[in-house]
Image (tube, rainbow, N blue to C red; front, side, top):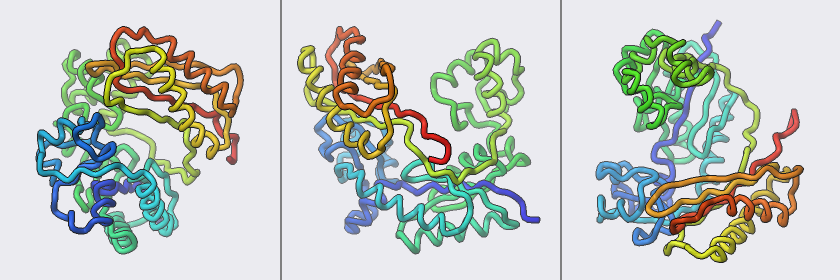
Amino acid sequence: MADHWVLHVDLDQFIAAVEVLRRPELRGLPVVVGGRGDPTERAVVATASYEARKFGVRSGLPMKLAVKRCPDAVFLPSDPEAYTAASAEVMAVLRGFGFPLEVLGWDEAFLGAETDDPVALAKRIHDAVLDATALHCSVGIGDNKLRAKLATDFGKPAGVFQLTKDTWFEVMGDCPTDALWGIGTKTARKLAELGLNTVRDLAAADPEALATRMGPTIGPWLHSLGLGAGSAEVTGTPWVARSHSRETTFQQDLTEPDDLREAIVRLVGQLMADVDREDRPVIRVGVKARFAPFFTKSRSVTLPGPTRAAAEIESAALTALGRFDVDRPVRLLGVRAEFEPPVEGY
């Protein structure tokens, strides 16, 4: 009987790669995509080509800082519709292999495969995606999702890497804890305060001590991450959005309450297009505000009942806005609509 493997397929520099396909003359050049493509405006980098990353340009970096680090880069506006279309082509190729496919986003997905040769399968997947779309991908192979996901980074770009229980500590043991999928900077800092700096440290930690410091649920979960444990089940259930959001960065900070309310109303108007497409009721509305110089807070309102009514969603967003203590200029606002969970079989 063939063994069960999880394969994590991750498209290399996806957004930048799509743009280069549309503009072949940019191949080999540092390309930065974000906002309206104007590095003098307030916006953040959506993605950067490998050539731009050599200069320290990364996703989430302010565009103004990106142009300082890489002044010769080509800056392009973000085009979500093009990326959605390209992603759909890739996922169609992956579905053609006949294995359960769990889509994680535009540029990545898990496959659950029964095979005696996962490396050969991974190479076939790369070649099939490249032949059909001219996009390269890297493939991580693992005996569970966590290991497959982490393996992908070791295979980039356009390569294959396998990570299993037997090689876990050899590969990951000396890595910092925030190299693990699910551990961010803040959690890594808390772990460091406990003397847990590496994956090996975390795996050897006392689960009860972790539960005391990090919480009865989070503590044991973090310990399991250190061991490389995780689910190997790949579900082929179609991905359903839990929420949709719209946000805008202001070129000039907003300080007046009326201007903030007008911005919220505009964002809700944009968000309703997403709500209408989902054709599912909204149960909670959230507002995100980024204050000068650069710290972010959020507030949310649970609706009295599920609704698709724009007026009710707008009212809830304005209520959430009113829960902020606006004592600093606002540089960004966002509105999020959270949907009622789909019924079984949706």
